Amino acid sequence: MTGQRQERERPPESEGVFPPGLTARVELTVTDVDTAQAVGSGDVPVLGTPRVLALAEAATVAATARRLPPGMTTVGLRVELDHRAPTPVGRTVVAQARLAKVDGRRLLFEVTVTEGTTTVADGRVERVMVDRQRFVDRALGNS
Image (cartoon, rainbow, N blue to C red; front, top):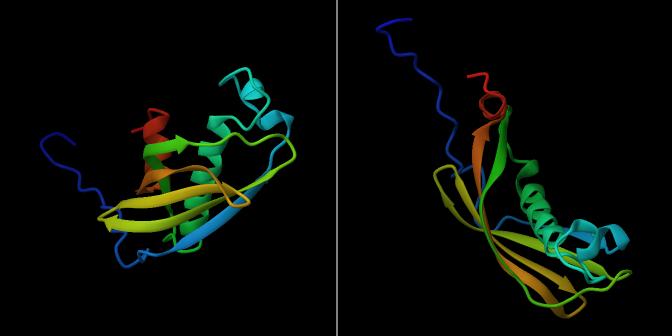
């Protein structure tokens, strides 16, 4: 439509949908496919940093999954992660995410990954709430 501006429905704000303090945890028992050697992030047979990050992100997704409005999802925006300790194959790591701050559609999580009493990794993951279909359409060049 020439000369007319199409109004798009704005995604809802995250405030009220996701209260700060929301938490979730996920576990992973490290196997050979999770090692730095297997994922291409190094040549040692311990849990690779990309898998640590994926586990931390999975915890943030789990924290929001049951509260998402219909048609909405969250996507990763920014990550700060310190991988502090190696984890050998056979050990179980636990990622915990806690929603620390909500700013409009942005969600800031504090994440920790532990193996027993050892902190394997910690940091922050920022996600943003988006309209799922619009996001996929844009990614595929359909908008």
